[in-house]
Each structure stands twice: as structure tokens, then as C-alpha cells.
Image 1 (cartoon, rainbow, N blue to C red):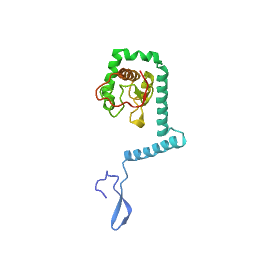
Image 2 (cartoon, rainbow, N blue to C red):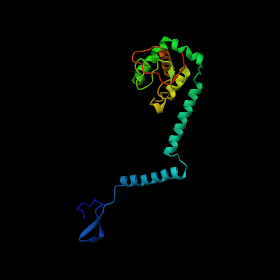
Image 3 (spheres, rainbow, N blue to C red):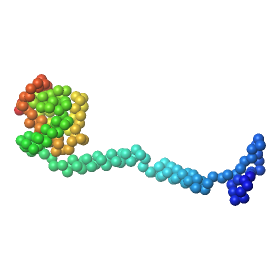
Image 4 (cartoon, helix red, strand yellow):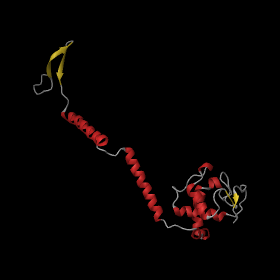
Length: 192
């Protein structure tokens, strides 16, 4: 036993084992309240998510993905739809073509060459098209959706609609430029 009469925790219990006496030293109250609090929290948490119908992590993910999809649909619905006649004026707009050239040089030149002459990707300066007919709408669709089996990524989630339009205008503007070391024609001849 302790020599200090104020030490209330050093109480010798009435049994011993191998000459060792057991002392009664209870845990501090703050530790006990924390322990009991975690047990209560765990029970409430279990009730909420197992019995009470609380949304699981998968449920939260699905709800957020659905919200993103609804937002995309709303944005697509609010986008003014342009027809081929509206889009055909874009390759004549120097500012749009310059913006498209900038996007092309940063993202597309690695595969299609800096002048569209082809490399890993097809030649964009001739009248032959593997995908689509070479019109603005089909060029935009190819840029937006990509051609994964040929190695072209889908740029739709990355580029803004204006950037896709500008890039398509630049690509359509490349037709007939005949750069040096152009790749041989691929696809079908769609004329000009």
C-alpha cells in the first residue's frame, strides 16, 4: 500500500498469487467516457446504416454520378444546336481557325503531324476519310467521341464545345494544303 493517505487508487485487494498482491487502480474517468462514447456511437452508426436505411458509400457514389449525368444532360439541352450550314462558316473565321490551330498543336500534332500530314494518325490534308465524310459535323463527332480501337482518345470530356468546333474548323481548313512528307491516303475519297 502507498504511504500517501490521499492516494485512493492504491487499494490492496484481498488476494495474491505467487506473492504478488493485486492493486485496484481503475482507469481515468475521461478514458472510460471516451470508450463508452465510442461504443454508443458505433451502435448508433450500425443502426443508421444497417437497419435505418442510411445511404451507403456506394449509394452516395451512385447519387453523385446521377447528379453529374443530369447536369451534363441539362447543359447539352441548353446548348444551342448548330446545323451544318452554321458550322460551315467556322472554317472561314480566322480567329476560330487560329484557336483550333492552338488546340491542334497542343493535343493532336503528336499523332497527326504539326501540319496535319499524318504520323501515327491519318493524314488530315487529303480528301480521304476513315471516319465520317469530312464535313464539320462528322469531324466534330470523331473529335468528341474518339476512335479508341484506332488509338484516338475521346476529347469530348476534355475540350469545351467551342474548342471542339474550333479544332474541327482547323482540321477542315487543312484539306488540300498538301504539306511535305504527307502520309499516304487512307479511307474513302469524299471529295471536297
